[in-house]
Length: 241
Image 1: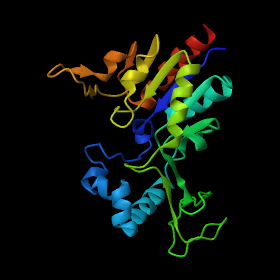
Image 2: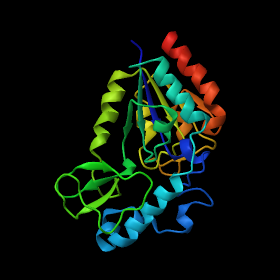
Image 3: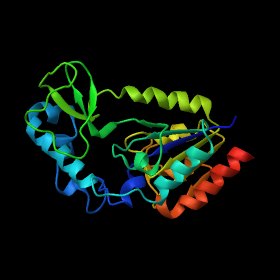
């Protein structure tokens, strides 16, 4: 049975109005990423980090899945067991579109996590309150369920499992700056990149300029939603070929 590995990033949800750090009007302009998205920042100012994730939940509440989210849910429904989808995104728009077989590599914004017992429990779109307690062990040491810079990401093991099982690799809306997609693409004879612009890849070849798309066998230079039907056709062709 043919399988497809899909890795999605921030560009997947950008058309739904989810702001990214790297956009020209993105979160970089309002926040120092190392203060709100790193383990060091969390230890230095927990209130600031909690306030940041509270704001992200509030912003997510009125957002809706776009054409790309819906297309991926359609693929999953039509080809059960053949779509291995790993996302770097922490929003729930894929789930709201209908995705069920999904691995969140960096956690989930709509959950909280207990630092004492590790329990993960839903918070939805509301703010984490000062009185928040773990429903399992009743600890006060409760935090956002998002992996920060400087923390381990246990779900990354699923990347290697998906590579071993799949014959086609699809990367959607990722700059390759968090998870390097170039070596992943080179593991496959067939690979597709969907991104609206060409992204440079950091190499060890001195002044040699390399672009991420050069590692893929096919590059769709469009936004995720705009590319959704073209991408669907390519994946369908592979699965049924």
